[in-house]
Length: 189
Ligand SMILES: *[C@@H]1O[C@H](CO)[C@@H](O)[C@H](O)[C@H]1NC(C)=O
Image (tube, rainbow, N blue to C red):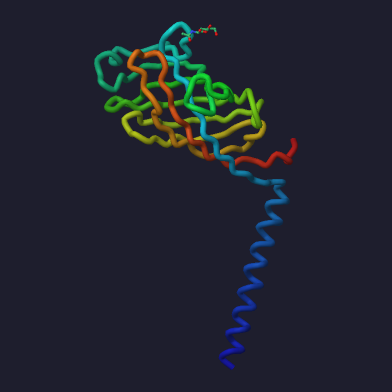
């Protein structure tokens, strides 16, 4: 008798689980939603000086030169993005946007950036980054809040760290490890 009850319970549980799975599948296909996860390792070539400079300070506050946090400095950038840390590495696109030192006490950025892919598998697509980048941390996490093209409906995160800092203030390199969920390619308009 006990055995029979166990068998019945196991069967009911199995049926319940299969049903839930089928429901989830139906819901997904009904929404036309298919999701993919993409991981990318990219390098940001931050040209802060020299004749081909790509990062430009455009504004500052009266506190910028007074506080160690450089509060109020605003910069606009259009940086080369590569697959390797060298400037001559394979190019994939540009990182374009606005960064501001927006913390009175510590060096932390508020970032509004778009990665524009100009080469390779994701050519023509973009990823949008919006969040806080605490420069004093060795490893930083910044959210990805959207995208276009292959990265439609994107959400994810970037784990970033400083790869190299140039003593001569010409070229700094940042490593961007990206994990992003987005719609599958076969979903059309
Ligand atoms: C700046 O760009 C020009 C044109 O691409 C190039 O010839 C030159 O070598 C670059 N300068 C530096 C310092 O990289």
